Image (cartoon, rainbow, N blue to C red; front, side, top):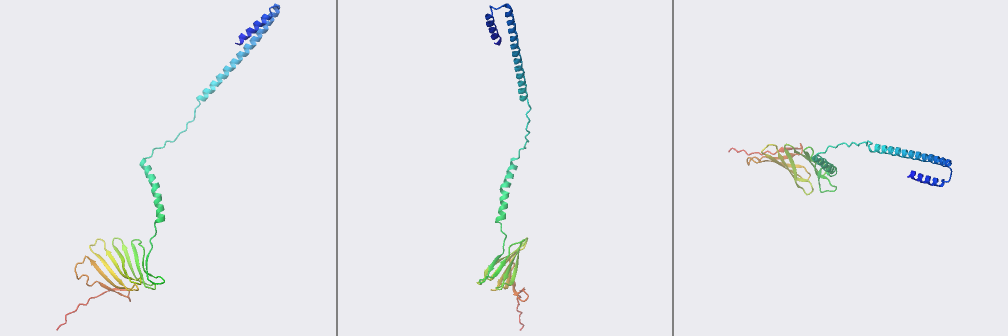
Length: 243
């Protein structure tokens, strides 16, 4: 394209110079040839520079394309057993609430009290809580003095007491203790009668099952206030009087 333009210019120039002398024409032609060579040299240099730049750009693109991308190593997590997962969830859901409930709702057992009908109130009977399979029933008079005590136990054998009746003033009137020895075919019951100041009076001991009607004829005890102990009542049989 450039050469064509150059030749056109040359023809126009030659046409304008037909009437000049040959020497001048030759000089002009030489000048035009030099200009043409200069233009061709510039064009060649320009094409060479473009080729070099394209080649460098291609190398750069190829290097970027083939550049090694660092890989991120993701640790492999072994799949857990579904049952183990469910167990762990159950422990989270149920173990923690049970601990909170035990802290808030479980109350320490306290003694149970029965009072006299008096002002101010005075304790008639105190029943302590069970501890290590044992408890006590303590009886008091109206002045706060302990008059009697019963020990209950629940282990290989049991001995438990119930307050069956009370006097109108709040003192205990009748208690019943049941004793059940371990590996025994018999069990025993004891009834104790108290007065209006919680002083024991009489005690009756019974065995079940009864072996005979005479078995429970001599089973009463009375309370000795001097020695604070039970004394078995004796039955005196009458002897025939000789004639």
